Image 1 (cartoon, rainbow, N blue to C red):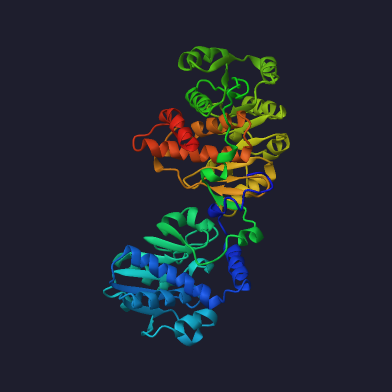
Image 2 (image 1 turned 90 degrees about the horizontal axis):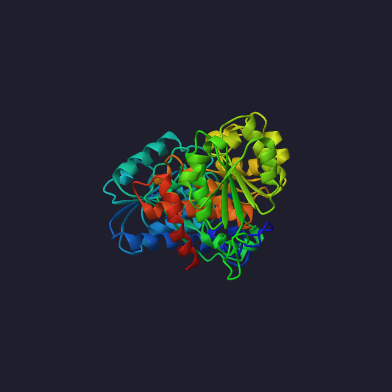
Length: 493
């Protein structure tokens, strides 16, 4: 996607809408001629159809709240009863307190309405959580929390919109229990993909309830779930007349005595397609790197003069410093020299920590494309940790002018202009030493070939996860670079 966000509608299936944006989508649909009760009826009917497709009729307890989520629940109850289910419906509050579309659909329910209590769970083989949805901004009270806990211990739970207690905008848990299935409408919300919300949602299904995709033109989403359709068209292409320099020259700063991290990064950069990959190393480290890296150029660097001569080579198109570099003034100075070239730079690990306590110096130095790849601990040394993960990554990107890759099982990639992507394909096997070094090298390899920083970061994070998924259990970081050709083949198929 370009910086103007023109890819937003084309990649609309991956758009993540905030609670407020989803409310706008509803209002635009209503303004376009769909009455609110009809829209609610479509939502509840979609939930009932999905349930009927997955489970055989039995006793289902439908737990309804006092708002629109509860109104959806009344529709679900009616449709499942019509399909032969034994429906037990309970309501938080009195039926005569319901208003609007919720009251309309409650009036169409002809069965009994029990008060919300554990008794309604008796004999249930399935439970529908239609209590609060994404609009809740506080923890469920103790009575509701106890009922949800009892429900989770008895039968699978199907949550409408999000499990009650999960914040739709952040994925924060204010007292939810895990659902087996969550059914939401039109588009996912950030809470469906950020942790711990993603885990609490179980499988998330997006149901079509008749909202036109064109409403995204009015909403202009700035957040997406990562996937190849966001950046596939921006991947570097091979040309019949190309040569190694047209494919970019990636430079990694190699540390000593910790040499493994930089070696992992260089292999990843080369496997990502960089025409040349070099590693700059202290002279005493030359034998180690040269023995281990047969297709990588190893460049000994002694002092500032050698460094300046190396960085003056205009054929080098992207730089990486951090993996195994060591924390201190030397790493900081080298990072500043790389940034001063105005060419693409990836800052990771020790390079980030070397600016702890003085992030403003880093901000001032960023004048060209830059990607920074902190984990939570490194992030906390440089930027404000207030707020949810999306907010923190966006704020750091806006302040620094760099693309921020805030790593984790729910990695967030944030651009300075406010765009953000949440990655969801990273398997737990990536929690192994050195995997972050491979990711940094993968970003470097794509940047070296001229890819936009935001696209390169998003693509690298997804490819990193896909490579690990292809390997499975027993993965170590050394395995990852060799898996990248299969990932790239899959993307070009």
